[in-house]
Length: 216
Image 1 (tube, rainbow, N blue to C red):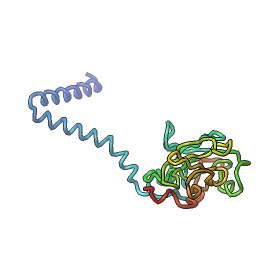
Image 2: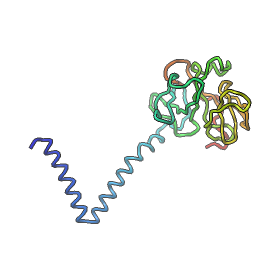
Image 3: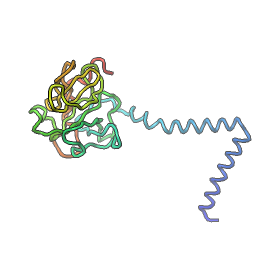
Image 4: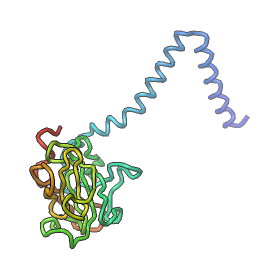
C-alpha cells in the first residue's frame, strides 16, 4: 500500500472509531458534539469580533489613511478615483491605516461618503481639499445623527445632492456640503483628500464636528 493510501485509511479508521464511541456511550457522544459545536462557533465569530476590537479601529480618520469600500462585493478594497462614476452616486467608505491594516470601522461616526464630480462644479474651498473632482464627507447627518443614505435631485434645483431621509436635510457636496434644505444646523464635516491619482488618501482630519449631539 502506498503512503497516500495509508493516510486515507488512517483518517477513515479515526472517523469510524469516533462514530462507534459516540454510539456506544451517549454521555461521550454529548460531550463530543458540544466540543465540536463550541469550536465551530469560536472559529466563525472570532475574526469579526477581533477586527472591530483592534487598537485604532475607533479612532477618527488620520492623515495618511486610505479609503476602502464599506460595502458590496469590493468591501475592504482600496478606492481609486477611476473606481467612481462621474456625477455620482456616492460610495460609502471606511478609513484604513495602511501601516497596520486596521480599518477604522469601530465607530459608525467614521463612515465617509465619497463622490466624484466635475472639478469645475466645485467652489474654491471644496476644490482645495478634493482629489481632482473626488470629495469626501462624513456620512452622518448633523441634525440627529442618522446615516445619510440618499442621492437625489435637490428640492430647489436640478443637481443631485446628499439627502438624509430621517428629516429631509439636503447637503450640496459641490459647496462644502452646505445645507440647502431641511433642519440640519450646519454643513457636513469634510474629509480632505490628497491631490493625486493613486488610492484615495486622507490629507487631514475631519473639518468640523462629526455627527450630532444625539449620535453615539
